[in-house]
Image (cartoon, rainbow, N blue to C red; front, top):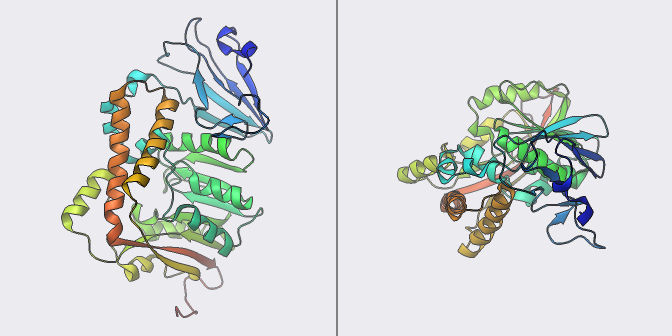
Length: 366
């Protein structure tokens, strides 16, 4: 942004417009003079992208407040894509008085992930996505539905890898908001979008070729019923992309209780064969069972520091107490995940549905 374009000097009643490739971002200000206004800030002019920048935007801080104090009710942004689709986002900047240590500690696990924009990855992260893409023949003609998408990592990165399109949904509005933001910043050309919906209320308007479940199936009530719903959203055939955890030895009861208090749900307690029963009606096109190495203190510190710094910058957090609360909670989540690792393994699976076969199995498992 040049010095002449500082939005603070613009009329408060005029919307600020910035072109971002194929998108027009319109920020509806509607604020009285002297109150903070917000704009989408392009990268500074440079011959080469700067560290942390992507697709013409400052990835580290997409929203910048140019004046203080922050208004209690901030404007909403409307992104209009060239295909006519409209996506509404909540502004990243919020009233800092609402982002308190008490609120950080009180948020549900999904809403906390959404607030800090944690890239909640499937077991195996990008390595798992690469296996899914290769063995399920994902490509530009594929239509993908991601279930429990949180902040949109899997669908967004699969679209980047393969050119596929699709939809992700999650019950957390905060997570969905960040998923749409992340797509604009990190994959602006991807034909994907994210919506807030309950798994048992969502009704798609199209059929899909692939479903991304990751490790989320067992977090849903009545998984068998939900899989039956997904099958009804396929044509003659399709693929399920899953990476479920299973136990290689029983978890101590006190560790289960601790994990439940951190995550808000019970971690996987099933051994491999019991876990696989949920998918018995589908053909196993690809399977790889993987062990999990615990992260070192340095690796955990680097990840947490990066995520907390981005979250505080994005949220406008300026006080040490709130920053510490965010860091403590994220650190507790990562430490608990790390503590579970010696008891867990996971499988990277590509499962095929064919109407002519389902729900029977004619192929041996060995």
